[in-house]
Length: 458
Image: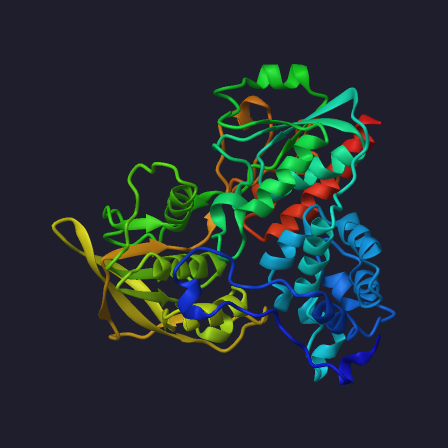
């Protein structure tokens, strides 16, 4: 260990940009064994590891880096999976630069350890050697229903099944995975990774019901009679519009609708009202990871031009920095310090966005800069298709009221410090109670809620 002066930080290799634009296959390659050992060997084994503290799951990062450096794959795999429900997935999609790697002590000059890439390597290599996550035998004395099959739901199911508690998962869509399946494009996360984890839960005894909407296909009364506890992991899937004139045009779309329809097409399904951006000028409004997913999807869909409109500067973009770099490599044009004022229509269709230039104020007491409109700076950006990637808010399904589950002013489910709702039989975690956030925080919520459910059922 401590070889950070001998080896430089290395990122996983990326597929050639001209090749990767031809498909939706993953961009990054998985570290081979020697590279993973070399990068793990850079870890300083800090006495108080900031990477561990910054990770929402508090993964045992230095421990599994040490085992990887020492080529003890079995122990590295066990440590990696001890705290995380799907480490190989989070190794690919987490914004490591602002989480574990962002707090790595080597950032002072040597470059952070490539934590995410090693995390993925450990698990993918273990899977190749036939290793699987372990679960306890099912104890049918207690049953838990999980509503929603996204990161929080998968996590809750994983940690409940590890304790032998029977689980049934209910998903209103046609496939399990939620955000992991329909919200993240294949070039960031191959869907076989999600299917593999779901299949292992099924092998462990979980029952999965797809195309099953609670309150419609299954009543709350039946749910409460059949199960000892219910976990709500329904996410935050309601897209936000910019609330500007002209956004009701049929060629103005929400990001989730665009991404979901592309993914359904990629699954080989027939898609109603498919959003075709080929040979069109596409403008995506927003600067987060979802916006990056939309612009990078658009270039793969052979758009004529793809622009990202963001009201702040590049330094203030909330998304992962590597996704911004990847999008630039793939031909996306960024328009910073620009805010949409209205969408111009012709024959009821969007043809351009009226844009106002912006400036940022000095940071306030919170450290955040406010966006100020530059008067008289309006101009037009041509657009055949406009995609709104402005974040998500929780949906409020009618069954919550029937279940007597309280929500707050913005639609989030209210919970106590035990992840319990106003109805003590219901627990909740992930975006539906904290607002739209990261897959890793949803996974952490699912894990902690599972622990509280286990205590309650004991």
